[in-house]
Amino acid sequence: MEMSSWVERANKVLMKNVGRLPVVFSRGTDAKLYDVNGQEYLDFLSGIAVHAVGHSHPNVVAALKKQAEKLIHVSNFFYLEEQILLAEKLAALSGLERVFFANSGAEANEAAIKLARKYGRTRMGGKYEIITAYHSFHGRTMGALAATGQPKYQESFRPLPDGFRYAHFNELDSWEAAITPQTCAVLLELVQGEGGVVPIDPAFFHGLAALCQRHGLLLMIDEVQTGLGRTGKFFAWEHLGVKPDIMTLAKALGGGLPLGVMLAKEEVAAAFEPGDHSTTVGGGGMAFAAALAILQTMEEEKLPERAAHLGAELKAEFQSWQQELTIIKEVRGWGLLLALELSIPAQPVMRACLEQGLIINAVSPTALRLLPPLNISKADLDRGLTILKQALATAAK
Ligand SMILES: Cc1ncc(COP(=O)(O)O)c(C=O)c1O
Image 1 (spheres, protein in one colour):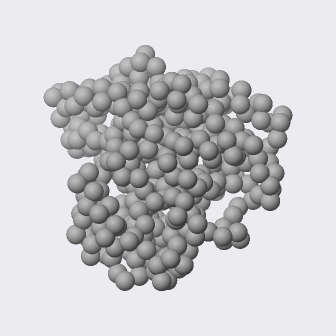
Image 2 (cartoon, helix red, strand yellow):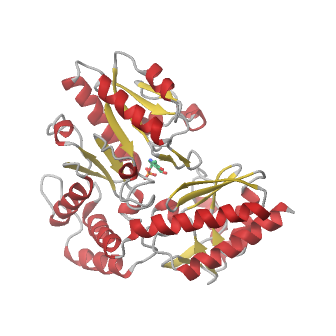
Image 3 (cartoon, rainbow, N blue to C red):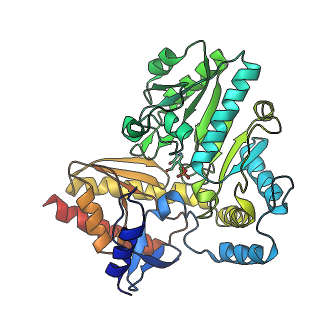
C-alpha cells in the first residue's frame, strides 16, 4: 500500500495528541530506518534517545526471541529471573542499592515522587514539597507533569497535584529561595533534553548538592534521556562526581520495550513498605531480557566511551562549520546528546533533512537536536553530516 494511504488511514483513527510527520516506517537496522516504500533514512534521533544500540541489534533480537518462548510475565506476587539479574546489574552499575521497575520514564518519576513523599512523611516530619527546574521535562502523567516546569504542557490539565515549586536551572539563588520548611527533595535533569539540550553548570550542581546536604533534602536526578551512556558516561552524574539519592531511567534501557526504573539508596528506599507502590507489568520479561542484552552490548562495545569520543569529534566538527555557516549560533550538549542553536527557524531544516533521508529533531523553534545511536558507524555518521550541512547551507541562503 502507498505511504499516503497509510497516513490517511492513520489520521482517521489515531488521536491527534501529537504532531506527526507523514512517514510510515516498516523496518530498521543499526542506524537506518526504511519506510513502507523502501526508502532509507539515517536515524539521528534514535526514537528520542531510545535506540542506543541501534535498531534491531542482533543481541537484542536473540534475547527477545528466547524470552518470548521462555516466559513473558508473572505477577508481582512472585519474582522473575531476568528481573533479578537486571536489578543486580543496574545496582552494580550505579551504586544505588534498591530498584523498582515501571513501564515508562513518567512512571519511574511518579515512583520517585511517591518515594520522596513517603520519605518526607516518615523520616522528615511530614515534609512533602519537591523543587524542580523551569524548562524541565519529567513526563506526561499528572505527577510527572506537575514536576515539569513548563506551563505550556500544564495549562490545559489543571488542577495538577500540588507540592511542587519551581526554580531556575543553573541559578543557585533561585533554588535556595524556593526551599520552604516543607521541602523534602529536588528533582532535575543534568542536561535538559526536551527543554532544548541545556547542560547543567557544574558549579551550580555542586552548589545545589551542598544545599541539599545542608537542608537534608533528597537529591533526585532524572536520567531518562541522559542515562545509559548517552552523555559519555553510564550516568550523567558520573561527570559531576555526586551520586544522587534517587535516580530514574527509561528510554535506552528497554530499547523500545516499555521499561522505566527508579533506583534509590538503601536508606531512602526503606521508606517504601509493601503496598505503597506497584504496577501490574512493570517492564516484564521481554523488557528485562532486552535491557540485559542492551547493557551487555553497551559494555562489550564500550558505548559510553564511544559516545564521549564521537560526541567530542562531532562538537568540534559543528564548531568548525560555524566559520562558514554563521546561522549556527551555538553548539551545546554532552556526548551524543547535542543541539545546534540557529539564528533561523529549525523546522524547515529538519524537514529538508527528512526529504534527503536524515532524521533529526527540532527540539525548540530554533534548535536542532541530534541523538544518533551510540554505535552508529563512521560511514553513516559522515553521510548524515553531509546531508545536515547541505540543508543548513541551503537554509542560510
Ligand atoms: C528527562 C525525561 N524524563 C521523563 C521523560 C518521560 O519519559 P516517558 O516518555 O518514557 O514517559 C522524558 C521523555 O522525553 C524525558 O526526556
